[in-house]
Length: 140
Ligand code: CMP
Image (cartoon, rainbow, N blue to C red):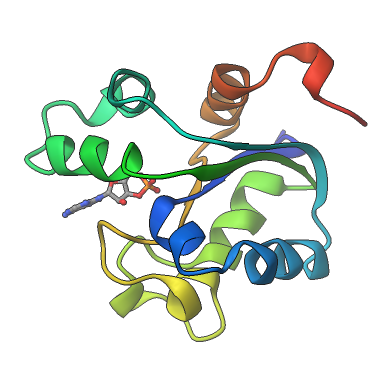
């Protein structure tokens, strides 16, 4: 059975470009309820830990440097079938391949600076949510 929560970050590129409001608005309009929200900045250590699953990839260092380069918005989103529906809303990792109207098609620069993160499974949504939020920071 699919879960009803996913985790997202609005990445440093989209924050710097002034897209926080537009992206949160698109998330709301698609029927996701924001149950946790934080404006924060990752240290290089924390970014490395968050993306440790990609540590063997050639882009890992670039990814960690980028994700710790400026503030981000972290959020937990609630909706039926949240992980899959949110990945549809954000579009393909590479914005050049993202469907028109998706968040990445509208706001991302390239495959590295791609505006938003979305969990790829229910298990990772739970892990990533608890990486950023404690129980007292989540509201139903
Ligand atoms: P995200 O959904 O946050 O998950 C892993 C991230 O790695 C991904 O979005 C991209 O930002 C980044 N990424 C994936 N592939 C590449 C690549 N080929 N070059 C640079 N960054 C990448």
